[in-house]
Length: 198
Image (tube, rainbow, N blue to C red; front, side, top):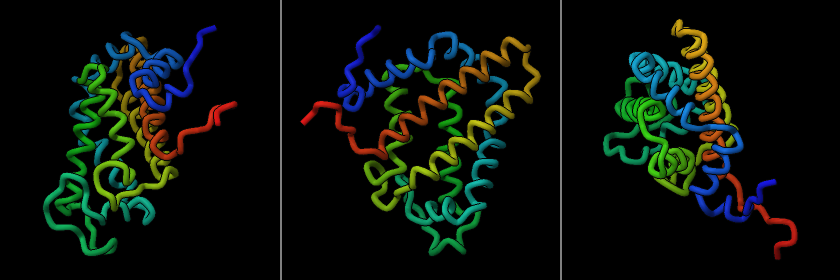
């Protein structure tokens, strides 16, 4: 039985990510499958981004998070929820970020820098990073991740890949999105007290 330093899981991103990858079984073959999908998925990224934003704009509880100034955006902000349209320049700015994120999943090396990037994706949706005005509740992040996971599944299954490639690609995305979900969730919880800790 492998011994895990649970306190270190909460403090050391590299240690936490290594544990998640080992436990879930995310390894070199998964990275290869993700990178192998880049050429066929890249042309579909704009469609995926549009689908995500259509969903986010369908609910007041998710759309409202696009009214405050987004981190890194310098232009005009919408005056209120009702006036915020899909063609607003801040939404275009956010869509570009999402497009780069989806591209990064299938092109970047899964090294320390990539893990920091995935961790920042979680942190930036809280007041802990980026805009202090942005505080997306965890339920909204979970809903979004569930939608993204299903959209990615539908996209992969629509590509007509050879069965073995399709299975490997889908499994790789499944594992990766669970790791991403953990690197979101961790920013929404206080560090747990370990048994016997005082």
